[in-house]
Structures are given as structure tokens and as C-alpha cells.
Image (cartoon, rainbow over all chains, first blue to last red):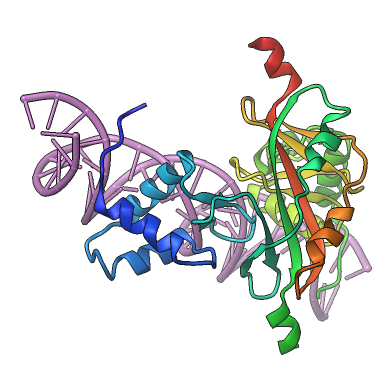
Length: 129
Length: 129
DNA sequence: CTGCGTGCAAACACTTTGCAGAAAA
DNA sequence: TTTTCTGCAAAGTGTTTGCACGCAG
């Protein structure tokens, strides 16, 4: 694997994600970073998001509902996806890591991890209805 | 919502999925159904897969690893995704539905369901290495 | 006859990639 | 200098859609 070199674009993307608690898509990141680097390209944004999530400095969230989203918070946590407004919300909940042990009891492979997404209607959408 | 009409293509797709325990992609379904209906189009396959999963007769699996997959088994269960061979395997495990209650304790929206995918290396890939 | 379903092809959304030049080490 | 990173644009992948015809009800 190639050696990592500093780039202000990458730094900026990382900082941007760290400053948000929502979970922007690559396109949203692009739109925002462009205010600082008007010439940055969408390709560069994708390349850096992918690189950063490979080295574990950010997290990629696949919801199955449109574009992937990215999270600057790399501490283990789960997400809730609102089926109305499509927002993705961090859940502050007790650990459910024990499900790995439950899943492994009757399985002959090796389970390295899991991703759980919860679905439903968020508080804001309930109020509006 | 429009009224449902019988179609032999749709029936065939449903039967095909019911006959498999792996989790074919839309393209795999297409390739196989074409042996019975040589003129079926990929668009029709996608339309029916989408319709069938909307009405709950099949299940759509988004792994974040390539194309979506489809499962004819609609009884609630979880999946394991092998990061080596990319196969998707049904897990026979005790229910973890209690995680919904855990997630809901400190959340103001309404959680309707969840999807958990486990990741790791499957038994076959472990043997081969 | 009415209207949903189909095949076809074009369009679409999201993401990746090849290239030549710019920037970091 | 050497190697990585960038902007640009083109290509790629998976999926959806408009249209005219076909078939179920």
C-alpha cells in the first residue's frame, strides 16, 4: 500500500465531517468543501472519502436508501434511518455487541463485525404528522 | 395503488427465488429466468423484484457490497456477508429482536424495524486459506 | 374494452478511473 | 527527484423509466 501524503483537500474533508452530526452524502461534502476549495472535484471528494474510510478515520454508512453517507464519528455506534425524511440519526444506546456471539453459535465461519441500522419514523416527522 | 394482475413472468421470478437459498442479484435472476422466458427483459425483472419486495413476498438485501440481492425466504432472519467471496449466507440464530427495545429507550422517534448484517470470512473461505 | 404488464432502449444516479499536471516529501 | 494527489472528463455499474404493444380481467 502506498505511502500517505498530506493534502489540504483531504484535511478539509475530514474536518468538515468532524463538524457535523448529520451524515452527509459525498455530494453534500462536495458542495460544502467547494466553498473553501472552489476548484475541488467530485472525484477527489470520492477518492478521499474512500481513502479515509479505508484507514478508519471516518465511517461509511450504506442505508440502501439512495447515496452512501459518511460519518466523522468513528466510535462504534448504530444509526436510525427515517423512512419519511430520510435523515440518518446517531443512536445513543447500550451496546448490542453480544449479538455477534449469538450469531456465531451456530455458524462455521468467522464473524468480524456487524452493521445494524434501525428504521422507522423520526421524532420530527412524528410531530409534523 | 394499482390493482395487481397475474403475470407468468412475475410468478416465475417468485418461484425461482423460492427455489434458492443463496441470494441472487437481479442479474442472476434475469439470466436464469431467461431460460424459461427467453424474451424477458432486465427491466421487467427489476420491476417485479421491486414490486414483490414492496408487497412483502420477497426480501431485498442491501449489503453495501455491489448489487442488491433478493431472498425468497421472508421469515425474519439475518444475513452474513463474506468479505472474501462475497457470498451471502442465512444465519440460523436466536432472535435478537430485543435490540429494538434497547435502541428505543433513549430515542424519541418510532422504530419500526431493523436490519443487521454480519461480516467476516465464511467457512469455505477459511478452509481455502 | 380497460388498464396493468411487457420488451426495448434510453436515461438515470451514484461512483470509479485514466490521464497529465501540481504539490508534497 | 520521486511519488502521491488533484482536476477534469469519460466511463462504469446498477437501476429506473417512457413508450407502444400485449395480455389479463
